[in-house]
Length: 560
Image 1 (cartoon, rainbow, N blue to C red):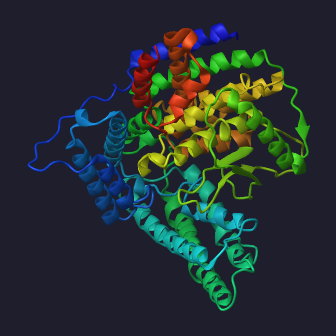
Image 2 (cartoon, rainbow, N blue to C red):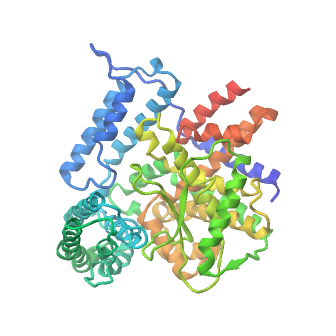
Image 3 (cartoon, rainbow, N blue to C red):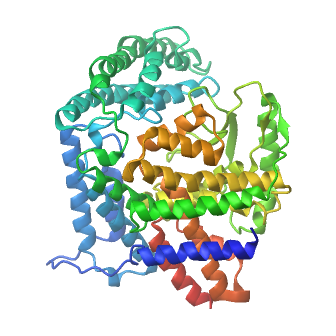
């Protein structure tokens, strides 16, 4: 497909988005009357960040009630501020913060806490991956080991509450799909085995020599006791509950819409993931059209990828990093100061992909990391498009630049907006040709294949959760469109089942970024500059895409 015909296809998608109704640009709110002036906006949003409960940790009824009350309180505080009195940067903070509070409050309508087990990403798996990673990169001091013990205690509370919530879910008619529980039980069974090979004993075995006695003996005994006497029994208890009590009553359906309130629940998740008012049926139609367009492009790109031995993959990606760092300044005026490490993925990595990026911790305790899957004995390809997607100019560049803007409120520095983050990563991978990194058809095919996977997600996710697709129907579609084997298609389908609407963000976000760039090129003409455009998109961090569009509209008018 030529660049001109691609622009036509993209334009049709943009017209579709406009016709179906993206959320309107933020409108000024009415301030509530008060005898005292409202507290400054910056103080309000900083207080919220310090008081909030991290998403996914509030499972107990009282914690949920407290979280909802907190969201309502801060929404009322923000509405009390006259938006028109704010300068431009503060208006942006106001709009993003208010949108997030409104979305979070809406989310409490639906009992996600009754479906806590995700076989791809839940606290027991997160804890196991972190423990396994300590085999290469151990904790460094007694304070870090103390924090690790606290994290174990948090996982214990989470597992106990999860069992209580799943029992309540069975009573109320909210159960997880059986196919997900069948995937979760062997994982939990393996994690709960008390053997010397358990990943949970790794932190004690890898304690650095810098930790001296008596701290060394005390910490070692505390770590081993916490694992043997508390953590492993709790994992086994969770496994046994699911295997014996929950699995027989888990539902055979896979659609979120099969649950009470399920259709409106899924529609709410779709709005949050895509920053549009499009219905699942409309997104399904966009996905079908995008799959057809991208498959036509793939047919013009014969694949003859170069391969390397798995043992050489880390070196190959480190070499690619050097090339990418040299190329990126052609399209970007600002690069993050923070680097990212390239490490071999541990066996518990859950992405099911060749590469997985982990953002640096907000407190600086862990760096940004690109995990490379080196498992297997067969030669592997160096996935250039996926590398750009995950690192530069994709996830790492966007996320690190955002974290380095110390003047931003913390909720903007360390927060995320799904369509922005995922859409930007896919858009970044599309820049490989302009960066001179897609030097052959195999590299271009890799970029198109990444787009195809996201486009197919639009079809399958909405098919499963809104159009009564069966699990087998989704597997067959993915096998046909993505050339996956049974194992790969089942894995991807189960991920769509476990995480409704999440996979919609990448394609819908990328469509929007392409549309915004095309609009800027049209409005600015010869004044358009890639570096200026990308800087304006990224400099204020991730945000809902309609708010970004409103911001860019002002910027374009000023530049014109």
